[in-house]
Image (cartoon, rainbow, N blue to C red; front, side, top):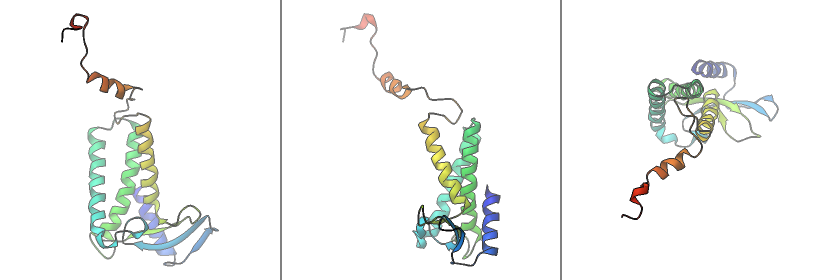
Length: 172
């Protein structure tokens, strides 16, 4: 994933004119090369270093979970692809101009019919894998591959309440 992102960015830099629309499929898909100093929609341009720290923390958390908790192949794939996306944008922040740790992320994919954002391969994987994480959690699939039983949360709440045995009734 990291390699795919970096190869796509290298191809975009080598082959696309900066800040000019290149129609690929009309208004459905366009390439538009920009170097993004901020987060989504270029927000936070003055605090790029915070994004670098946040990406690094997320990468460490994913690696920690992968090593210590993940036993599910599906979780491993989802978190691995998420990590690849995070590392793709983190490497831009660390290695691209204007320099460490405030490098600009290379964005070049535009789908104007869907949203006015310009993004990259790493962004696509971050978004789709975060949706996948949410779905796995909602479906009750734990990191170890076991499934949360329906109503187990209700049972946990109920187990916090004291349970009377037949001999205790009315003795309190």
